[in-house]
Length: 153
Image (cartoon, rainbow, N blue to C red):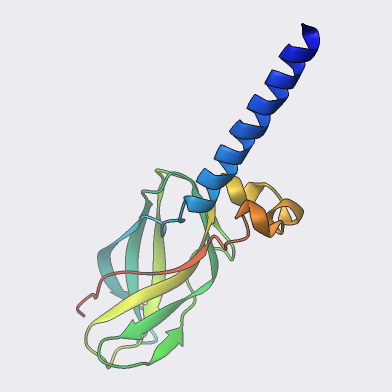
């Protein structure tokens, strides 16, 4: 009797594990839900124009901004790296917001800000060794390139 219960439990465990792995493989990670709002412009005494942006994390997990933001101008492939008031690799908690100051080159018209953002999901927290097991479907990157809408100067 105990052997039947043990074998039945083991078979059920294998089936549940198989279903969980298939569901995990089927999940396609969504891009981070990050909203940008332009609060104001400011000028420095040296003539540099700054944009004051509000960023809100509307995602279900924490986000990290990787590297400096890039400023992109409408109708061009011109991207320029910009320093920001955010510390490198700063983490924005879910449902939290922050204010960032980004320098904007003056001559062009409409522009947007781009960042490489990493989502801190459950898969990302499993550690690099477990994520490398390809058949689990956990080897996808949680790093995305996000951009604001075009902003007029």
